[in-house]
Image: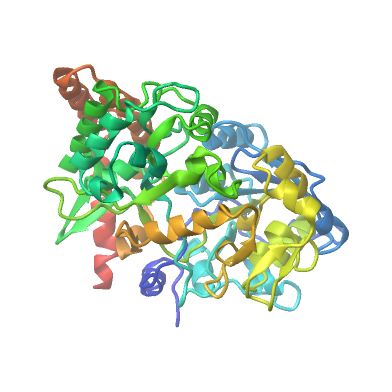
Length: 561
């Protein structure tokens, strides 16, 4: 198959491969070349470099003497990877870093067009395309499926990042995790005299919430009927409210655009977006939603769940978090009783919305500073992490088989931890203890449908760990996930309205979701809704943004048909 650097043929090829589900992540970027056209000796790896600094584009607890990092340093690949983490909002941290001279060696961020544009405009990056064509020296980098690389080339053929967290086999990709759901405490459900079947409709859920409000937790406090995490760092494509929007038929995945017949509907224009927040406001006014939901931090939300204060959750089960049940061996704590139910039927909604689009394209990008003196160490490390082995994400996350874990019967079968000290820290639920053993950099590797570690473990901790797998398998069958379509994959032009105003549109969403939720009555809700629509138009240039998207779709996608 022959690809062109500018996108249509590459898009067609990628779209063909999207016909099967894969890991979520956006497609490639056509970047403006920020550096010189000339290849100079500064772009060649310096020999003997064995250490580099890797800046993580997310907040994390790090311990640069973790056991896995020690293995990397002393054994394979013989590289000392020193981690640095962001604090607070990733884009704010990135802009500050760029404006103060840039990062030292390498930076890894979740694939994001705003990040890529900021990186490219900084003119602080090193072009990397030559290193993907050196199979003798860098076989791991050379093994990256060519269609991913082709989608990343700019008009001059330069590639400005190392792609990671992609499917090794685009023709047969891994289906991915699913976590957005309506989640009930079965013990509370039993106390109310109701069953899961009674929760099949929105009205049934409301009945349960009113009954749950009358129940007490172990300390005698009234239960919080319904809650979710309003994370300040979330977005339209990933927020707990999306589980409610999904039940109302609103699509939030991808760019928040749903194709209905020959027309496209943007999430904020979908009448049921308003209806979903009207329902949330109704529940809030009746004191059936946690009154602190808007202000609760992640730590507070976690504590309320682990202590058994909450009867019903909506959103991602990772936010509860999953450790509420994964650290248990039986029904000894409230976390054991969480169960995902089908999305409740909402009157007038024919089918649920889409909250996850899956495709095998890279989910992360590693950017390399043009001023690094440790290029050889960077290339050596990512050549190691990107070896095309089905188990490689497990190797990167936990070390090689035989060190801290091993196969139970045969390779690519079941596995378990074999080092009790490592296992205890790894599964403690304490981020500081976990950081002592592994930095959890699975996203620096790739994945394969041939073998996925956390669906094949018999010893990832307590018996509750198996519940997470059951959760994601059940949620994945609820009709809320679809494979990527051509309109999910094309890229918006740099410097255009979409890029310019998307951050402000996100700010508006976060500002007004709270106002809509907490409106004191119907009149105030309607005013807040009108203000929301006005803010989208005035501050977010909503009509202009949508028109640019539609025009780009016609140019990039319909030209293929």
